[in-house]
Length: 242
Image 1: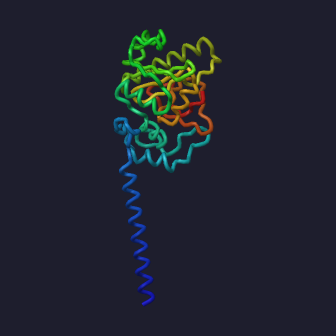
Image 2 (image 1 turned 90 degrees about the horizontal axis):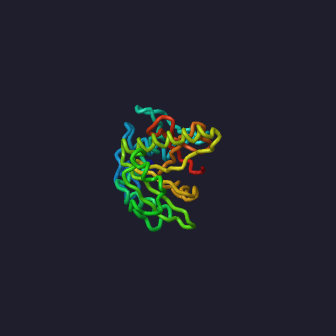
Image 3 (image 1 turned 30 degrees about the vertical axis):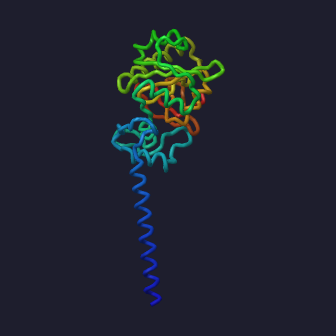
């Protein structure tokens, strides 16, 4: 009789463990591949998909020191950490939505998409086409600082933006090889953000935006992680301390 009760208790305990495991697996599956709240869902462009992204987010420890990206390479040549970073890049869909997203992390008061707004730099309009910019937004950050948003759209628009930035950095380093240029733009899938005050941009470090760095001397250190940009010679990094 005692042996029967002991076996029954063991079976009940095993059933509870299996039930809990199934619930956890279901929760993980239901949350996979979600974009940041309020933004359109972004379909994973990689073959590994959202499962690899979650592995990179929760359990990836390799590469945390020395700036590595960690994880085994998948069919697309990306590590799980790189795929996680790229899969979670925000996509706004419009310049207004891009501004609203930025406002979650910064002050960004009096956001305007009026092309004639005097808070833009005079050179902004001049370079719009060559940089792949379709629409612009600008807002105040207090203390005379401002933040500018450039909407490029996905694909060729963002690629043109990164290519133009890479060329600009090359020109500046050609004039001054010792120039310490380690970023400036934080980018998503279809928009880029820059601020007069680097401290303002650092508030976006939790936004899933990544810093576009095209300095050939850049070297990821410590906990800094990188992922491939759309153009050779540049990387996307979570290093906002420039």
